[in-house]
View 1: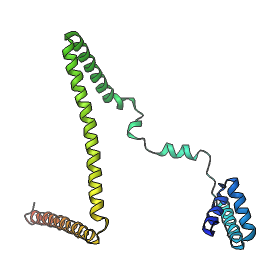
View 2 (view 1 turned 90 degrees about the vertical axis):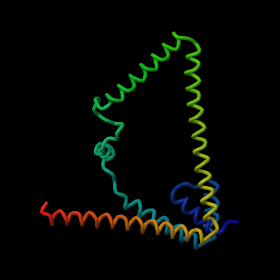
View 3 (view 1 turned 90 degrees about the horizontal axis):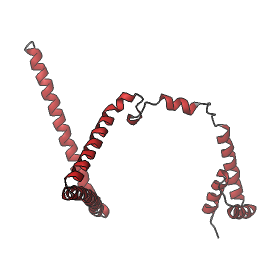
View 4 (view 1 turned 30 degrees about the horizontal axis):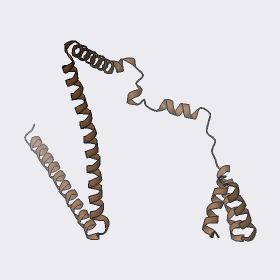
Length: 192
């Protein structure tokens, strides 16, 4: 047996047109016997009609006009010369890689193996570093969560520390402004 809250949710879904056929039958059966839900349904239908009537039509081409007025993102530069530096770096890196690969093949297999080993070292270092960074952030999150989880005193202490740091920052900021203002006054008094 459903309660009225669940039927109210079904009424909202009905207005949105998202009821499944079994839910629609269940709601229809309930509406036959419940005056409150029928009144709620009528009110929701009236509201949906008002919302539909108050909808403002969007002009044709609005999206295209809006997209044209947006500034271009950094990677969407329209001028080909803006990509010249990136293309030059790519050519230098590709040439260096080709030269290394060619010299390694011409020199001997041990040199190529050493280069491959160094590259694998960098790759495994990146993977290990990413895992360590992830574990560190999780650990910090768990520690802070446990610290503030059940203790109001810890939250108050954190608030006091943050407030103290804010006051210290403001005091340093005001002291700096006073020193700058005093220096400006000395310069104007000296005639400079």
